[in-house]
Image (tube, rainbow, N blue to C red):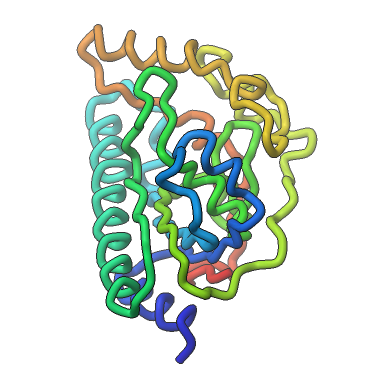
Length: 246
């Protein structure tokens, strides 16, 4: 069994929904923009995704209901991120035992709290790995589940087989996420590699909305740009119930 298949087998046993392998050789500068020297030298990335249940996402228009907000925050965010962190840790240990270097990137922690930037963009790794494209809502959009998933990344020097090219964006003229944003933070601009996030998202306006909810004692939950995406609502039947492997 080759190394790719072994990794897939390990992750399948933990009920993952998405696994992809990215060639990072030409993206070193892009990765180092936020991660700095710690991420340099890793020529492969493993992207792993868990789908958020529709039963949780489809209730988001009623997120003012404490039960809806709690379900999304706990089971649609915190628990999935915990599971992803454990998967990355166990996979890192396996590759280390095989003699390879690894760097597991935390699922949701921010290294720059003010600007909400992580060590490495999980959606960028997933995009390079061919799992989807980055949408106007600044989220990874998959053909089968839209943006309804959580991601984690593992950087490594293991000689993994990677995809040849990322998926091209399919948002085209759709502005569902722009219309759904309660504070108008999503600008409706298509993703361009290397372009700053601020071209597509008014992060400060988005952040202020969450802070306002916190100050009023509410659960800081939105997710409307995730809920509204047509690719999340319209499932591709042949992908349901199977692990998407790239």
